Image 1 (cartoon, rainbow, N blue to C red):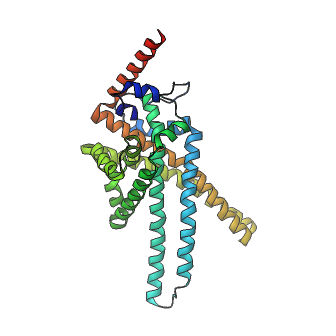
Image 2 (spheres, helix red, strand yellow):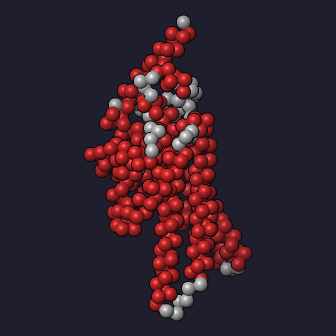
Image 3 (cartoon, one colour):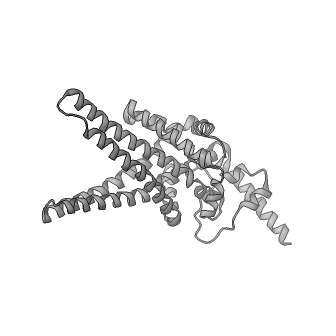
Length: 309
């Protein structure tokens, strides 16, 4: 993807590329089917577990570091409100709703940020290069502020849309925000330009973009529910065996937090890679990215042969 942007400059492209090593994932140089976008998203998690899980954990921990103190602050403030009046009860209900939407916003922010951080890995898969932390650092050079600003904007957009129209509102903005993370990192543009560019990439095929994102989030939701249900059943069994002691309850809460954190660290990269591969698919369908990359790789091989001779 980034290689296609630099395709007019083979010398820059050659200098930036890393030789392909065995086991490097490969995204076909053609428009992808819906199922392939989902499959290749998992393939990148499987092929690059160290990069995927490390960044997934980092983002998940960052969200928790902000979310837990924020929830505790809301709880402390709400504990001072009297429940003896209708006004007090209403304030408590509004406080719980505000806490829920604040955490939801942080989750959306983390998802957008991770999709930008992992976009270079999907880019390397498309361009036939080896992904690495060094490549990610190079891609993120000078992009941190733009990515964080974009993530905050996307988080607010998704939360406000959900608040106004529930699931319908969230779904309506997906063609606008789904591709923004990869766009802001790989195309080196600002947050608002990235939103306009992502909307342009979705174009008339926004229904397909929405369907792929819904499938990705459905997979995420099913896996999350499966894990939390298993943990919940285990917690009920332990409480029934040993009784609801304070130490046991605290231990179960801590274990649940760790398991949810680990689950999010595993699943969130899948959703992030889904955005990166979908970005490549949109460019292959609408802008001939596959042809640009193939031509750039041909020029690279030709240059290497000339240098060797």
